[in-house]
Image: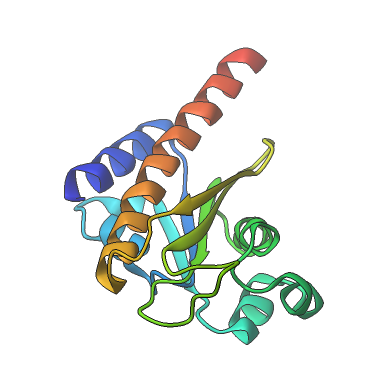
Length: 168
């Protein structure tokens, strides 16, 4: 995980891009992995830990009605979290995750190990991924989510750089 985080910090720093995280099920682990890297202040703006539904609304502007209608663990809420983090920070790219780490809390529709991840970048469409890790234990789900989020950030940095080259 440290190698992945170091790569993201290197790439974002070189591209002069700032990052922010909006985390529910990971409780700040993505921001923690990024800020573990020396020099991360050149690339990390902030992290939002929005574990409760109220925090998602208060800190990121996710409509309470949306959460009530589709549930906190959903595509729409993950996208709203990522876009809210972009609006509430000076970041160029944000990653948001919301999921069910377990051991309880799952259902037939939303089983343990389900995570919705969204990546938002200024000027680009927001990207969503539905991740199904299965019931690999609470720590397993959280760590797998961090790894996938770091990979997603790296991919988003590449997309922003590509868009820059096309517009030049």
